[in-house]
Image (cartoon, rainbow, N blue to C red; front, side, top):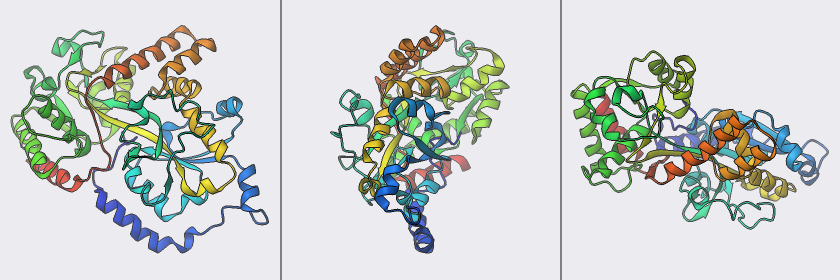
Length: 402
């Protein structure tokens, strides 16, 4: 699945350099006026809806729900989750001139914030009424902050792990057992039937956290490995590969679903929606998405205000939208429609109850809230733009070629 995932072929340096190069080539074409002919910029902004650009997974299927709630009309342009394309679009095409905010995977703020494309969040803005009650685990996440600056508002996120068939490893079929990553990497009962993600960003971080947790390697940040640390992680993975532990190295989301649905593997470090899709074919609860002993690979989408938008007349409306992402209505519909969690899940549960949602929907929201809280108790690692991306990718290639 490409949603929320960094393309492993793009290093931090490469996609920034390509963005700057593209900027030079397209500067002339990127100067389209933001206002209509004959209208002042202020008049245009005051009468226009809030315009967003970002990942499809963050949007509501029907934005009119929000309009009825807070009076703001949304004009949202969806894009795929290729972080290189997104960075180039924002940096080279001056999207801030035509869009008010962006939603994308955490990590873009490291570059687009300091470079002036994102405006720092005004935490005491009068329309951001839910900020104070939003947990620090969400709002102070390093996925939406850089250099002690709050660049984003949290929207959705999750802690990724692996899917498994409980009967194969002798786990409780209710899915509440904490399954160790030791089983994924070394379990004899699954040897030769484990699928591992081709993305070095995820698989190396998960392996590094496993080794760190068990004291088998000296690792500071599992999501941003030094040359020595990356070499140790790759050495371990090469050893497990040569031992015949991995059946396949997969790339696409569709492969995840196929491998599970066909029962070609017993464990796979996939994304949670893959287990849900597989269970549509196999039956509810056939595949479990793991609670783990050692921790999770984290990802999260943030909403970032375009710097140019702060000079327009619809800043209050922009902040109404940011606040909406923290509220119960968005939380409830996002979890129901897409299965994703986010900050203030308790408000989503309250919303569902107050609006008479079926008990099964309420129970799903309650479970989602409990699931996220439980995951956050564990180590939670992830970076889309690690500073040591080049050495991590280099060592990962050694694993692939082994």
